[in-house]
Image 1 (cartoon, one colour):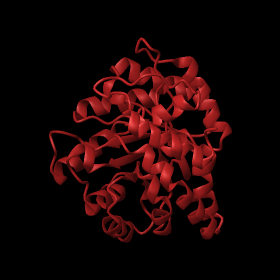
Image 2: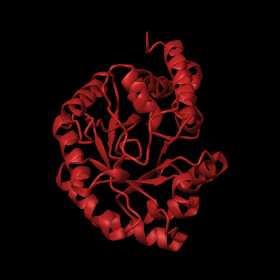
Image 3: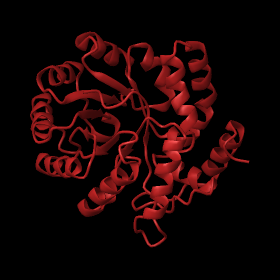
Image 4: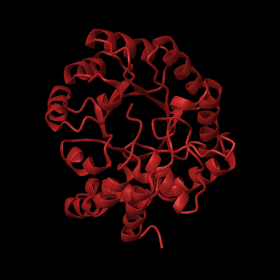
Length: 295
């Protein structure tokens, strides 16, 4: 039940100046991503500012992206919550609106035990029929989904098929790969670690970089899968200065600034996120010019 292989874009959500979702721009972004070779669209994740959307907005954006995409590439909907009941609701509604899979982050703030994580993820997965990807990002949630917990979930729950790994801990990732022996689709949650993760058997990346460089992110993965590891590594290393600039402030502050610099009208951020500091924007602008995506 693998959802996709390659580079899936963690898509931003464009807003109008009054704070409303800009659906005209969202449609343009989806079409640009598909034309750019993106392998999947991840809707309403961290980068999409789902945490400051109402449930209605959240589900409307997922449904809209599914309608625009028309199954040309998979749409994975971010439906996680620190409330299991809410995660079930969002996941069921995302499936109704056409999502091909769901991305479910570990509960944040209440910091469940590993036993609690297993119960949470199993309950959500059992409520839908589409594949589910776990999202392990302890830097934002305060809890790490341990490798044996992930392995157990992938073995025991039919539609839990993989994990977005944003720990940066390659010892843990290697342990997970060993425990699952190909039974868990692992995606990098860090754009600067795509090739190292692919070398351990990863399926690809859920990428912030893809918002501004979809073709390049796709080619990092495609080159690796085609056996040209040297080319894949070269593309990865060329992108490092831009990737660093895209994360010099908390995501998605820099990537929305980058898209606005490119004239893509991503619009403002929703509070409590604030606009990028001028000195950081200067670094970002220079990195974009050096990378060739800004004149």
